[in-house]
Structures are given as C-alpha cells and as structure tokens.
Amino acid sequence: MKDFWNERYAHQEYAYGVHPNQFLEDTISTLPIHGKIFFPAEGEGRNAVFAAKKGFQVFAFDLSCEGKNKADKLADDFNVKIDYQVGTIDDLDYEQAYFDGIVLIYAHFPMAIRKKIHLQLLRFVKPKGIVIFEAFSKEQLQFNSGGPKDFDMLFSEEEIKNEFPNVKFDFLKTEVIQLKEGEFHQGKASVIRFVGIKEGLN
Image (cartoon, rainbow, N blue to C red; front, side, top):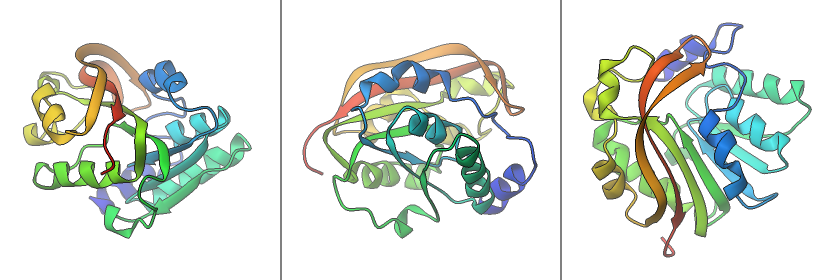
C-alpha cells in the first residue's frame, strides 16, 4: 500500500484537494480548543492543516513520504506547524492518553487488522477524548466516487460499534452525500459518520 499512496501523492496536484473534509469542518468545534489532535492516515495534510489553522496542536502520520512532503508544503503555505510522522502504527511512540482527540477521515485499513489498529489508536487518546470519523460504507460499491473496491475494507454501523467498543457515540449515521474533494473523491457517495467520546482508560 505504501507504493500505491506514494504514487498517488507524487503529483503536483493534491489528490483530494487542499480544503478540509466537510464533516470535519462541521464538527471541529466539538474538539477541545487548542488541544492536541491526532490525524492517522492523513495523506497530503488538508485536514491536519485546517485544524492547525484553527489553533489546535496537530499530530499526524501516514505510510507515504510523498504525502508528508505535500502536507509540509501545505502547512508552509498557510504558515502553520504540524508534527507529521511517516511509518506504520507500530512505529508511533506517543504516550498513552496523549491526545485530546482523534480524527479518522477515510482511514480504510485491511479487515484482518482493522479492529486491532483502531484499538491501538484509541490508546493514544485521553479518557473523554473526542473521536471524529468519516469513511465509506458498504453501500459505496454502487457508486464511483472513490474509496476501496474491497467490500471488507468498507464499513457497516455494526462493524463500527464492534471496532470502537470503548466509544460512546453522540451520533452514528450512514448517509448519502455529494463529495467534492479533489480528483479522486467526486460525486454521490455513501459514508458512515460519527462523533463519539472515549470511555475508560484503555
């Protein structure tokens, strides 16, 4: 997957645009002002840079060094700072309960390791920390607006509940929306969105 994403992000144009995801823009006020916010699988940095512009302390990671290069450039363009690491989740060395919130926007992992990754990521979030999530639903296969073509990498609401067992959902919805995010997210799409609060210590 690293080679796939490096190839996608190697071009001058931003694959998913430079503007933030609309759901993040609509819900960012739920995050603690000036808190430490974590963006896994952040790609070219559009959402992380948006949060930094809003005054948050922003941390991100991705497999792709090309994604980091684009994110760093975008941050420079807007005169903000983001702490962006390249690697896998096993390379991350953050302390447990370090972040005030986590933002997962189209972070699709293979089914075999997906729940494990979600639980690992949540360990970095403080109790009562905020989780903001948007990804493609199982119904996305009927649309051509982006996302994995592997049914198992798409989400159902029941899978979300199973994979985030220590999250109390403020809301959890499957919606059909109109995507306008760069070249690769364009058109009608079926997504699952939630905002939740981490419960417990682990």
